[in-house]
Image (cartoon, rainbow, N blue to C red; front, side):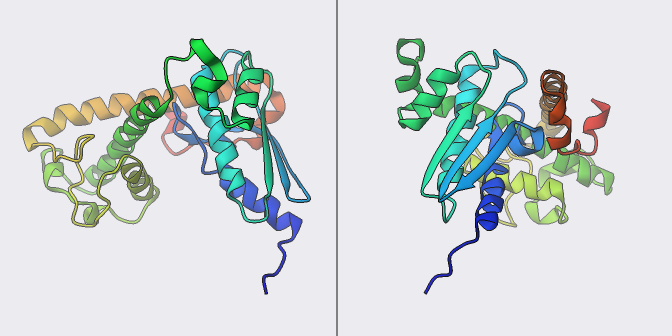
Amino acid sequence: MSVPLLQADVLSAVTAALSTVRDPELDESIVDLGFVRQTSVVDGHAEVRLRLPTYFCAPNFAYLMVADAYDAVSSVPGIHTTTVLLEDHMNSAEINAGVASRAGFVGSFGPEATGELDDLRLTFQRKAHTACLERACQLLIAAGWSVDGLASAHLSDLPKSEQRSSLLRRRGDIGLSVAEDAALFVDDCGEPVPAEQVPMRLRFARAVRVSIDGNAHFCRGLLTTRYPDAVADQKPLRPGQEAI
């Protein structure tokens, strides 16, 4: 016989589910960024209200976050129906109605949409992997590895750390091996990068990482300018982001 979940437990589970939803461009949790304004659960119905840094944030990214939040919350045990509402956005009506009806991006925007967003999502998942790879490599370099030597590194060489966990998740997102004996420094297709190319690829990876971190820092500032109360909801920056 199953024991009914307490409403507080369900609400906590909903928040945990929302924490897995990431801004595709910034590669950070919408909870950590302060994008979740309000969450409530009443008699198995969850309602989530989201806010973004500007009125005109890209509608494709906004749609992905609302749709992902809907899917994440709907999967929580004890939740029977879900409403996710994006507030104060130029396309709130289209996005909210489209997600509620499961119409997809094209169904939500009609002729304005050129297609669904799978390719866009993959592009930013690959950027996120590149940024996480750079962070992981810096961890090994700090431990004494040479840049050229990274070509021979395997996932097993990464110590338990936030960098390792993040990299494994991003590799999984784009279908790369997460086996301990898998090569660390690989391209988007999982092919090991030759030693002579590693320095150039690492510089590129750093540029991608700095760009993502810089955009995240900027968007946090825009959000708290628009909604001063969002400061209390934002998780502190990762080590290193403060310098961006």
